[in-house]
Length: 325
Image (cartoon, rainbow, N blue to C red; front, side, top):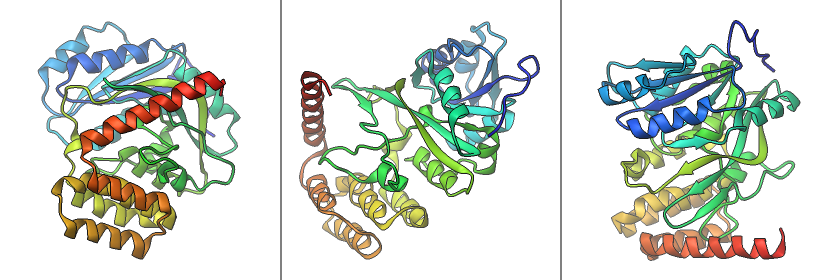
């Protein structure tokens, strides 16, 4: 396990934030990082291409712990994260998306969990609060069970509209050396954190550690462009096929019949639906819930599915509060 260097020489944690053309959001993210109870940090903001507005907004934050790295051309969020990791001076690096926020004790809790970890290179993740205009939920709903394959924890659903496992970029802290050894994959536009986590977990000295507290505020469904929402379904299918060796057949089928299906469903193409189902059955091991999920994705319009999902999750949250769980 890496040890933080002398506090007078190097920071304990490097925070890497990729951004482009969202000055109001990135300054909010930066301020949440600088407000951490762990003060010996650096915040490295990588601006993904010419963006005078973000440069000017960040220049208004008078804190010597902030470093801004502007890139001359756009290369995408993954390339910007890799650039930030190369710039990092700390033994630990934590990722923060420009549209998210951290709770003040996030890094403190993660560093304590890292110190207790058995693995030489632990990935330390936290729960988060998923805030949308329709609902506010704690994710992941549960932590991994002992011996549970992590690829299945992340992907296999126990309910019709949701899974129990989850990992998101802004929750991840890991050794800087690991991020350099296993860089983010340029060109992956959706499920970037899952792609990185599965590849990192394939390393012999790596394990995943979760903290039970929700220490990240994840803003979703806000009125702004989202790269992942525009990802063509075919490119996601190609990514999943390439990634099949990193997951169990059960996990592979679950992703094929949920994520890839939800991206392809707007085509309303029976041929595409058949192709996805055939691939899931040929190289995966679907369960009953996967078939039901696949059917509702292709038969129920997206807006209606979202409304049903939020009502079900809200009801489940209310029932837990009443029962004291």
